[in-house]
Amino acid sequence: MPDQSSTRIRLEFEELVLDRPKKRWNLYFVVASEHPEDGDRFVYAIVPKLFVPVRPPANNVVDFSPDGDGGEGMMILERDMPKDRSISVFTWLMHSRNRTRSSGDLLKAIASMLSKSNEVEHVGSILGGGIPWVAVTKAAFGGLEIVGKVLKRLPDRNLGFLSMGEVFGNEFENEVERDRSNGLSTGFGRMTWTWSASSNAD
View 1: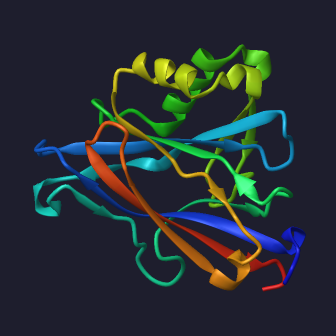
View 2: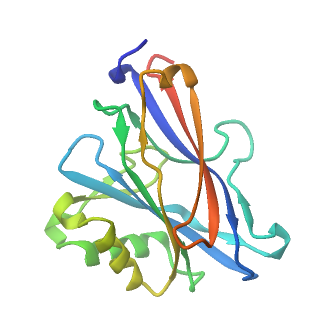
């Protein structure tokens, strides 16, 4: 079995089912995880860069499968396996009340509310996928309760929270994929996601 230094792990969103009758949704996710290189910091991002529009023909179901070849869902992060073989990932589903607002503006707003400017660092696509991530200290991150309060200050609707963290046993490399599904904390819907493993040598 390869050690964690030779294994890459990847998180993809597969499907979202909303259990609410609203006809039009403009969705985005706030995702937070541990910094892959600095244990004293968290990173967070807005995904996707463009809001996910959900209209009546979709029946309030979002399938994140991409067109063409590649992964089976929407790639959220990819990194080397942590030394302790566990990772924390926290996700909030948001509905934008302004279709023209950009993900960059949202990321800037959350950064300014979470921490002082000297505690924020733009770290680019440090977790892959071309997604821009911002790093803050764990003290600035403040935990899930603080982030929840910050999101309430946005002019958008928080549809619920999910913990997508995972502990990877030594057997995970043999599993290759691990499918997960859980309801949003509000009961407004259900998410399905996948963790996958690959060798750095691939």
